[in-house]
Structure formats: C-alpha cells, structure tokens
Image (cartoon, rainbow, N blue to C red; front, side):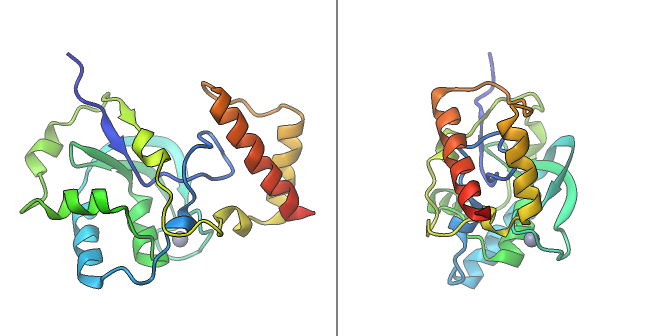
Length: 189
Ligand SMILES: [Zn+2]
C-alpha cells in the first residue's frame, strides 16, 4: 500500500515555471500577522525533518540578498505537509503569512510530531492540489515584477524559440504559462 501523499506548500511560481499553477509569494505578504502565532509557526517549520535534498539551488523569489536568500533546495516534512526550507526565510524576512488551514494544523498539536516525521518515506508522493488553489491575501502584486529585465528578456527569447523543456503538461499548465508570459512581455515593454 502506498502511504498517503504529503500536502505540498510554500512553493512559488518563478521564472523556471516548472509548475505555473503555483501561487505567487507576493500574494501571501501580510505584515499584520499576529506576532506570537507567527513565531509559533516559525518554530514549528524549523523543526521539520529534511526529506528531500535536491541537486538544484534555491533562490528567494523576492530577489533579496538577506541571510538565507540562496541555499540548497531542501524540503522539510512533519509527515503530513512538505515545505521548502526557503519558506522559513520568506516568513521571517518578507512577512509571508500561511493559510489558516496549515496554521490550525500546526497550532492544534501540543508539540512537533518528531516521531511521525522521522518515519516519513522519501519516495512519498506530494500533492499540490490544495496549494495551487491558495489565493493568498492580495493578488495585485507579483514577485515576477522584481525580476531584472535582462533575465525576463532571456527567458522570453528561449520560450519563443521553444528552447525550454517542461515536464508533464496539461491544458491548464499550458494556458497558465501563456498568461504568465503575457505578463512578462508587458513588464519589459
Ligand atoms: Zn528573501
């Protein structure tokens, strides 16, 4: 029997656009997150058990040079959810606030489920359906607007040449990527 898939969260759309259905980190910025609750969530996330160590390198979507803005791409779990280590930096440095469902899940537990997290299997599937549908707290902002114009031009030229390979595509990912490309074109016009 396959274990229940982990629920993915804290991944964002960026110029790699491997998954264009991901939400934008800027939508989740909320400087009014209650500080005690925010601190408890940070403490919870920091206790995550490293499950995946990817070869790739993670760069903060806010394009800052603050501590933790560049790091190996590591994903942590509590046996139910899976999040990138970069998310901790983005909550601390960029006032990213997480959805109520995850906050309630973390706060409902007396302590971090260390034993269950230790038993999570590396090959467990990750489901991003819930995360894809998260609208955040504001939508009229985008971390794509923080990209240097030369990087956007380079991406658009590779996209136009069909030089970028994507994984499994659906009508929805193709449409969403086209929409993001449109957004990027307007940005450098
Ligand atoms: Zn940052």
